[in-house]
Image (tube, rainbow, N blue to C red; front, side, top):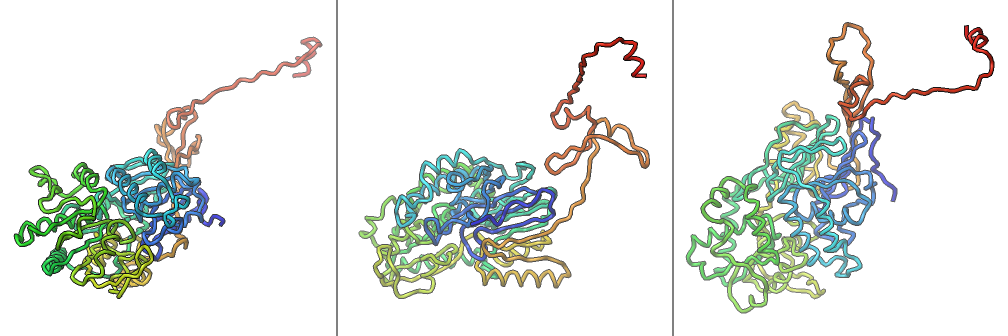
Length: 536
């Protein structure tokens, strides 16, 4: 394939955005932003419903060597799962940034992914990357604090709280004065342990926003918690077992806080065990305790008294062998999409019995078993190819920490960007969201262009910016007269233009002027009087 996304010329007024993943889909988030000859990759994830090379974003359609930086918003696989491949297996030579918490959890989640994802049907020859690749990628990752501004190759970017999961951030990218805000996954509602997404202090020219829930309006948090705990209570009361598929980090911590509080308040449940089944359980909890400063005030105040993540009624489950010998129980197991691992194994064991239940508490991507069972099929296909009867009860209540329509539309309305690009959503829901936002802005006599690009479909936007030259150094000491001509050396530093006296070059650009004197010698054999006569 030939590159379709080479960086635009440095003097071009055209900004392009090319989604290599999560364009009219959820999964493998990856976007290429180009402007003024600069190129930034926003996230680099894998598709949770695919394996091997098929799970990658369409990175083979761009010149990876021309990308200046990759910015990772959070540790979920659909946003960072392809990063080791990018950093170790491609021509990408740019820099990579994420928050401190994201880097710590990235190592844990990607390590688990290597073990349980079964790339390419389990063949090592088809694995995307190895443990060694993952370790080497860690060496290349740089960290950024919230609200810190970095500059790479003239590209300015800063990070802001996104909610969603611990360490998640939004990035504001500024290239020659044109500002693009990429939300990644975000939530404008504070939950039991995380702050809500913050509103950036400056308005962007382009807003790239997730559209996961489209025009859905979620129930209130109180209603969802009540619905969730009622489902769990009902299933265990009839002697059933409850499976809650959830990733090892993120919403699962929220669910455990809810369950532990509920169990404490209901003495009739004290004999029914609740398990957190993850091979990474202890590592995950250690990370959460380390980065408590990234959580909300409620958790920080509670941490001063006792650790809220040391649960009284929830214990770690290292293996599932002894579960056949016990009665009703609740198990939170990864991964959340039921594609493999412990959650898939438990689901296949428990799905034939009607007394059991499975609660989908997060967003389920199309093409995954978690999404498939929502329609309550009569049977499923096991990982070994066998057909299994599916009689257990399947329920759904979302704690996915994505914005719903109310949150998304309010966020867009506050920022009032001239251009909105919707990503990370299914096509139908995304188009409905586009129409709803356009109607909202039209009713208020405001202008907005809303884009919903497919994967590899390039969005082209034009921004005309006047050039300003700043006079500095000794040239700026004297106020010029009207129509006076000022001469100096024009210096371009990234996207700034300076007019500098030659004598000041060393101060402003680190160059020291040098003077060269050249003398020419000629052989002359006649008299000096003859030479002087001819020179006159």
